[in-house]
Amino acid sequence: MNGGKLIVVPTPVGNLGDMTSRALEVLKEVAVVLAEDTRTTGKLLRHFGVETPLKAFHQHNEHRALEGVVEQLRAGMAFALCSDAGTPGISDPGFLLVRACVDAGIEVECLPGATAFVPALVTSGLPCDRFYFEGFLPHKKGRQKRLTALLEMPCTVVLYESPHRVAKLLDQLDDLGAGQRTLALSREISKLHEETLRGTVMELKAHLASHPPRGEYVVVLGAAN
Image 1: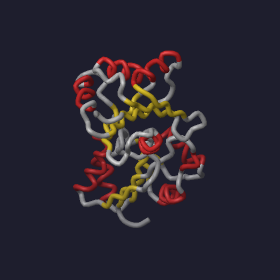
Image 2: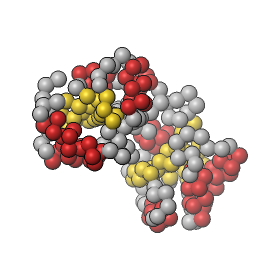
Image 3: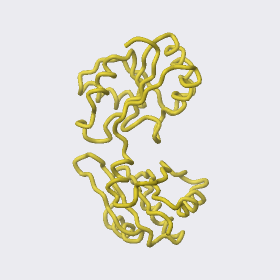
C-alpha cells in the first residue's frame, strides 16, 4: 500500500464471522494497526493470521500520540485504526485522529462494517427512518438534564449503557414521567446469547429487577408523542 493514508477499520461486535475480507486485506497491507487495546486487537489479528505490528492508540494516550502518528502518515505510511469492537469514532476513540488527518490533508477512508446500534435500532420495532444517536450519557453531572432533553425528541433515540447503570437509567426515565414510553433493550449483539427485550419502561424495569443485566446494552427509546 503506497502513500500516507489512515483507514478506519470496523471489527466485529460479537461474531467473528462478521469480519469482512476487505477489512482483513487492509489490516495485512498497512504498516501499523492502531488499536484501542493491543491485547484485544492482537487476539483478533492472530485469529485471522494477520502479522502487522500493533501500536496502542486509546482515550488515555491519543492526545499525546496524535502528533507522532500524523507525522508518520505525512511521511507516506499507511495506518489502520481499530477499536475493541465496532467502528472507531462511534463512542470509541478515533475522532481526534480523523480530524487531525483531515486538517493535515492526509487521506482518510472508513470501511463499512459492524457497529452495535444499527442492528439494535432495526430490530427494536421502533421507527428508524429518523433517529437521534446519543451514545453514552454522562455518568453524573448533566445526566438528568440530558435525559430530559432526549425525552422531548420527536424521533427514536439510541443510547449505549453499561450493565451496571441500565437499571438506573430505567429508574430515571420512570422518575421523569416516561414510565409508559416504549423501549427496546438489546445486548450481546451477534453473539450466542443475543437478546432484545421490548416493552414499556415500567415493564422492562420489572424484568431487570428479576433478571440481572449482563453485557453492554443498546437502548432504543420511542419518540415523544
